Length: 309
Image (cartoon, one colour):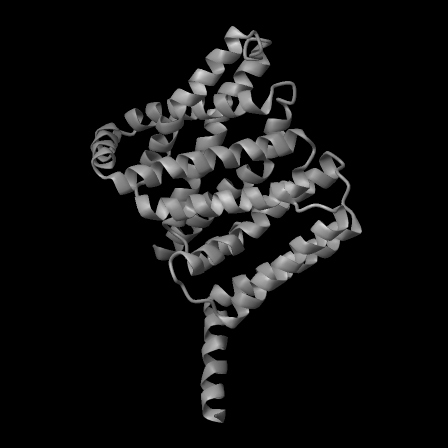
């Protein structure tokens, strides 16, 4: 039974990462729409989709109960608001980068993200790093530095994506609610702003929503494309180990990288290759350090070190 649950968890988690990996193709179909409008539509339709989903799954009462608790608890309220702003910023930068032909930078950002999460754990939650994890973080830093030196500027798209998603995860730790309810609350926070911006665009005759039926459907579908992988991820995360989840998460940036290079023909330079080698090495070391094998090896080395002393 446990094995069947793990298989089911792997399928759900892998599906979520596959969707996140290929979603670049989806947003590329909306290149004629401004990034600001895509973001506003994405937030608004995600909100509507989640409300309908909560009603259909009979979680609406639980949502209302938790929403009241959030309002009564300033710490949770502001954590939720910050999480909403962070994920909206992450979505906005991602959409802009994809439509500007910078898919490789988005891929790099999501490769760096786990290591940013580790750093935030150390700085904010006072977690301890092993030697292997410290070395992994240093390797990733060298990879980012290589790109910065080669292109003469910091790869800000990658860093913004990694940092905003890392901080989003940190804020979510403070909220700790069921995935569907949490996402609905986040979109509730941003939906009025998104709707207001969309209304402004329509008044200015700058909205592209009514340009064509395919454009309208793609913008509406953005809500489903946003919510579905998050829900799949939540189901998968409940059934597989954290270390296995850590390995599976590299599916998304790897698919983005391949799509950027082979589908949209973005230039993959020698500097990119060298930087990615450093970051991939960092991720391999980090992933091994959190697996049972890595922990057992570290414990064995520590034991031998004490015996030698």
